[in-house]
Amino acid sequence: MEVLSERLRNMSESATLAMTRKSRELTSKGYDVINLSIGEPDFDTPDFIKKAAIKAINDNHTHYPPVAGFQELRQVVVNKLKRDNDLEYKAEQIIISAGAKHSIANAMLSIIGPGDEVIVPTPYWVSYKEIIKLAQGIPVFIETSLENDFKITPEQLEQAINPRTKAIIYSSPCNPSGSVYTRQELKGLAEVLTNYKNVFIISDEIYELISFVGKHESIAQFNCLKDQVIIINGVSKGFAMTGWRIGYMAAPKVVAQACDKLQGQITSGVCTISQYAAIEALKADPYERPEITEMIKIFRERRNFVLDLLKDVPGIKTNMPQGAFYVFMNVQNLYGKKFGGYSINNANDLALYLLEHAHVALVPGDAFGNPDCLRLSYATSKDLLKEAVKRIQQALK
Image (cartoon, rainbow, N blue to C red):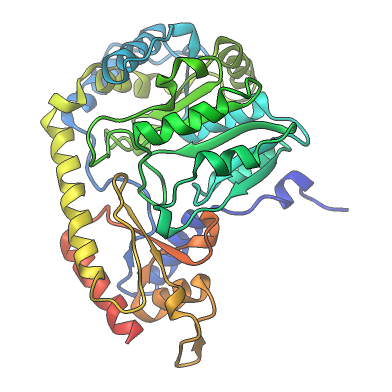
């Protein structure tokens, strides 16, 4: 008799967390490991946000909150969506959850049932596939490549939709590729999806603020999709608040009500202190806060810096990521190489080789649906990035 449920046995461990764990194990043995696998800003939460949390503690906001989040925070999200994205929502359409991942899980568990198909463009964030499987859905992948900037076309989307299709999920800016869909590209996808009113669109916009191409474009801007789009966002990336665990969803009312019901039976409302911190974060115009604009500037500089360094590394090809803080490197040209008992047959082999030989932690691309790539996070200092690429270059020689 199996001890664990089939549900858990079928679930894979997060590859990003697994690589972080492996790098920590080597570090504990005394090795100097540079961890470029982690997906969080290396900045501290701005002081004006921390002060709001301290005030919330002193004001004794320490009791159970409403399941869907404080009304004030939900209204602040509504105001933010209008201010930054010119989108019209009501507070009853907003659900506050314990991070954007929780929001995605809420959405999937609310709308997906056994046999429902969910379209997932590759590369995708590692948890999409496992959350779909948890909801007993079937992920249907649309493959992309470096040559088309890791973005799908309307023609590919049309071909993937069938009567079993219940949703599509994607991120822009994208984790892991850093690719950003333009308004025109989203319009092309919207023209396809408007013909399938039973298909939900889960738009993961958690990297909205970490964009190097100007104003963020959301597929929710197209009125023809008004009752289909589920926006996922939060404060983790753009406000350096990963540990506060605040994500939110803006969705059609029927979906929001379902997620409220679901969350009420699993987690209830999320941390009150974090909610008050998030209120202060989202009330601020991010493009007028120097703490935020400086962080984005530094990420852009690091992107340019690391891409320049990678030009001298043989066998690696990259796109020009327009957002987030990752480079998704194609490493096919290194297959078949051998050294010191290592044989590089795929990106997994290469990631393990670089971890053990160069002591640099990267994430293999098969976790993101593209097995020929490695993800490098440049959410660290230029000094560490320079040393990491130097080690990679020496190891590949």
